[in-house]
Length: 122
Image (cartoon, rainbow, N blue to C red):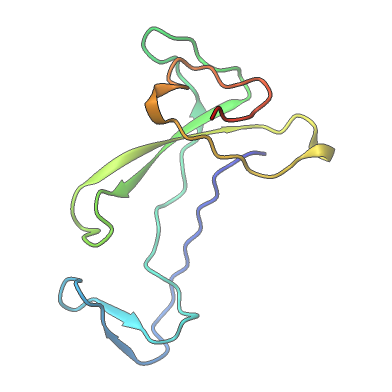
């Protein structure tokens, strides 16, 4: 299945730490490079994609979700913005190439159409 995978781990701090420069007071960063980062978002709610205004919905194999991310990662407690995510079920499992990422800049895919060969346009 083509998907965006997000993972987050959280454990108790097991080593010395220091204050993160530019972060709110009390924010700590472990000096252990293997220590996990801050907890990430919860599971995504994948739904059948709706048709955009004036367009048509992609086929039934496509699923859409929205990921809320900070507007400024230096201030994660500030405002957020929703990032639209789209995934499609692999059709030939033996020939899967892995995940593909489409850049939706300039509204190219906003009409609900994705190139049939799965290639992004340059």
